Length: 333
Image (cartoon, helix red, strand yellow):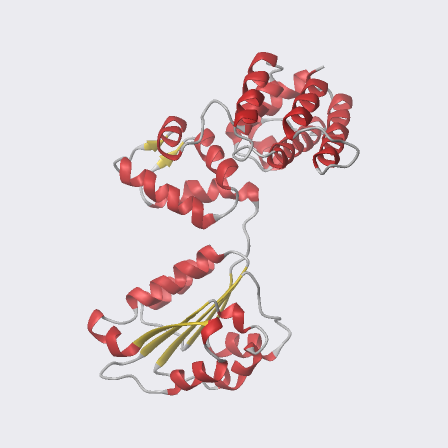
């Protein structure tokens, strides 16, 4: 994110704000910015007397302000980091008066996760005027693959599109979890190398042959044998491959396939942009479009909605495995 890069660059250049209010649904960047401040603003010798970490559920706003107003000891500034500041949501506006005139020798960092300040209220406006107000928004699923590639490129690694898709499918849009797994993989292979599906299977435990990505490909090719192999594998580990995720993945695929049918320009790059997928995956939609005309795709979307209702126990006592098997039989025939 450009805002994160700018904040880090300013701190490195010595342009340090007296207050950082880090908020939003995505905790990853909140953690990264606060960790960077914690590690880099003060020297190791200065941290003993001038850096403290507080927790929202253990302290009141008034105590935070009291600590923020004191002067540093034998240092240019002090750093106060308040983690889990969202636990102070009921009284957070009491920080307004301090934010209007923050102590210039204090760096106050508020980590306000999973929610955001009401920007119409005073605190958000005052922090934006006198410090840094940063909102970390949840990343859309279709952007995660690009994020993975960019993170790895910044560390001199590459990743195959299928490998990236495997991580997204298995870990969802939790950037912290994905980052942790990427760190493990980067410890294994030297810089300049490529992260492959095989490497992920061997070190993270995600099957490169039996996952929702491969299920989509098999359905698109109408490879009935492969589809049955995958759903039988899913049935053996339902917690790892929950029905709700499979239905959501299939719904996303067939919704995009319906959109693909309606495209005037079906060239790879144009289709990738319209479908919001990596160009590598366009060939899967091309293959599926041959097997599933627009009318059939519309029927499949209806079948997926019905399966979703059945998975919630409405008008059905079938197991998740049986619901998926019946759904795929209807899709393929």
